[in-house]
Amino acid sequence: IGVFTEADDRGRTFLTGVIEGAPAHAAGVLVGDEIVSADDRPFHAVESFRGKAGSPVSLQIRRASGAAPIAIAVTPADLHPNEMFLRGVKSSARVIAADKAHIGYVRVWSYASRRIQFELEELIAEGPLRDADALVFDLRDGWGGTQPQYLDLFNPHAPTMQVKDRNGDTSFVD
Image (tube, rainbow, N blue to C red; front, side, top):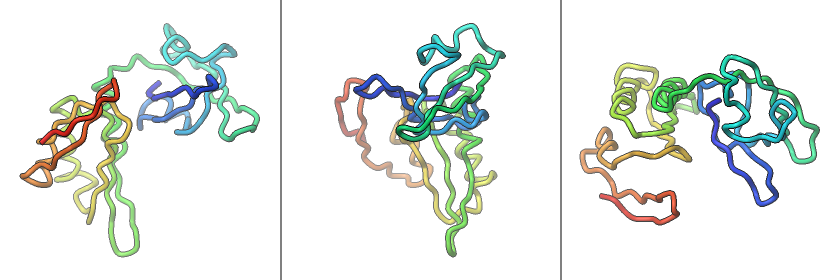
């Protein structure tokens, strides 16, 4: 359905990311929502949707601590990660007017494909971000894959980046 989830120490599952253009986004699911159940069964990130592509699944969502859950129907789809992340990049690109400036925003869920770099270049050169005075390049909480050289788009001398692997080990890359 195009989400990232995380369980807390009490076993509750919260949405930490909702990819623009994916089924969960279209259904109105939000970052921070607690998923209480799926089709009246305990929620499992993959198993709750296995074999249900094209058929609505009723999620019980809690939007605030102690609030009653609300039902949101989301229709799972067979998602291909690279295509989903590419659509998410395209769908997230927008310009926000702020005082005398126009701030461009784009969410990069994964940088593991040259196609994503090409799409970013297009969004900035010819797409909705071309008239932005500044740019927020949101790389938080995605699937990774970036190389510092991708930022050469803005500066031919890529900055040092701190990267954290899945084991929590950090290192610096030039």
